[in-house]
Image (tube, rainbow, N blue to C red; front, side):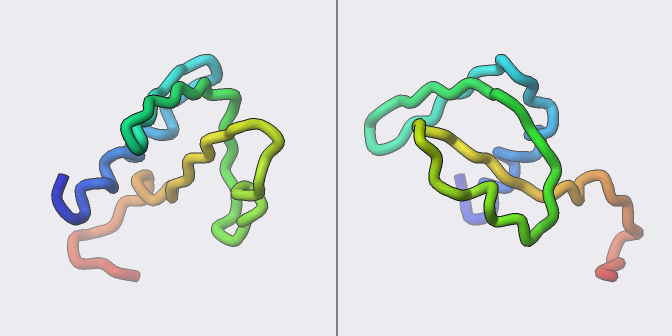
Length: 75
């Protein structure tokens, strides 16, 4: 992947449902995680990234893919 291509990894994050499984390859190891839930939080809700008692993968993204703006509109 080139610079900036990673944004596409999360573009369909909102379609994950409890029970879905995903794998992450990191440092020559494969980790399997199961989705347990999802929620929409405010941009400053950093508590969702707090340490957990069990190994946990927290995925975050913005919901701006649902906003429609005219080309060139940066407001």
